[in-house]
Structures are given as structure tokens and as C-alpha cells.
Image 1 (tube, rainbow, N blue to C red):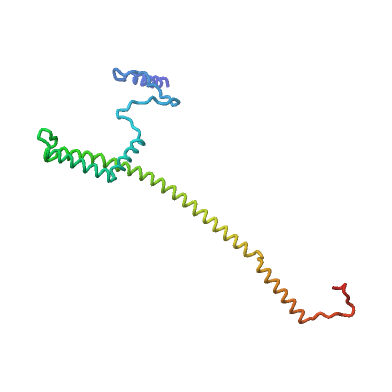
Image 2: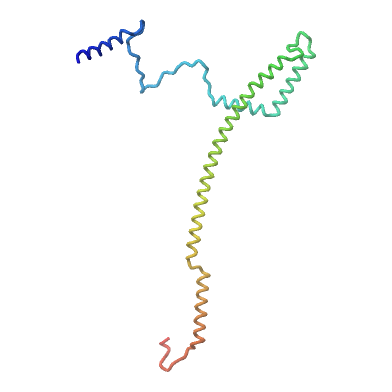
Length: 198
């Protein structure tokens, strides 16, 4: 037993000795779970996604208007006219209009993702709206079914209640029966009867 304990200690001691050079034997500092972490420095700039989404929706809304098409057409016509008719020293984009093509490609490459982002946000809003509508429809259907059952119960209950017409018809039947009996058995005044017997 003693040799086993010594060998265990020896192994632990060997582990400390096997640490690579330059490594410290001090334990790592423990992470405190009761305190918030210190904010890390981010390499990428931080931005508010909600504000960026609203900005993209405004741009997408503007790109879908006739005003944008008119302004873009006017700018392209002015660009082409300037670079065709201006003096050679003032032309900044000669005939093949490579710079104009670059600018239009750049505008399209930014417009497409902004439009997609705006559509995604609209899809999220539509999904929430459809979910709320579905829940409202389920509540309306449940209320309608409840009211239908209550009306059916009331009708069944009213079927067992004596109505005015039913009572009137029963009374008329009784009166008719009494009149028939009076015809069959007419009232005869006997000698032993007087007014107090009635």
C-alpha cells in the first residue's frame, strides 16, 4: 500500500515536472458567474439592426417609385449628353461610358440586397400579422360554436315550456269538451237543489 501511494505521488510529481518550459504552474483565474463579463472589443463596427432595417425599407420604398425612375433617367441623359457634347478636356467619361456602367452596376449591387432586406422585414411582419389573425379566427370560431350550443339548448328548453298559443289551444279544447258534455247532459234543476248548491 505504501508503495502504491508513493507511486501515485511520484506520478503527480512527474506531471509537474513534465510541464513545458515557460509554462507556469499557477492555476487559471476562475470565471465569476455572479458578475457580468467585461465587454470584448469587436473587430467589426457595431450597428443597430432595427435602424438599418428601417433605413433599407425607406430606400426600397423610394426605389419602387416613379420619382426614382425619372431622376435616374434625367441623370443618365445629362451624363451622356455632357460626355458627348462637352469639350474634350471636360469630359470625365468618354464614349463607351465605362464609368456610367460602373456606377449603375454599383447602384444595382446595393439596391438588390437592400430590397431583399426590406422584403424580409415585411415578411416577418406579415407572418406576425397572419399568426394574430389565425388566433383571432380560432377565438371567433370557438365563440361561435359556444353560442350555437347555447342557442340549441335554449331551443330545446323552450320546446318544453308552455307557450301562450299552446295554453290558448288547450283552453279552447276544454271549453269545447264542456260544451259537448252540456249538450249530452243538459243541466236539470232538481226539486232538492236551491241556489246555494251552485
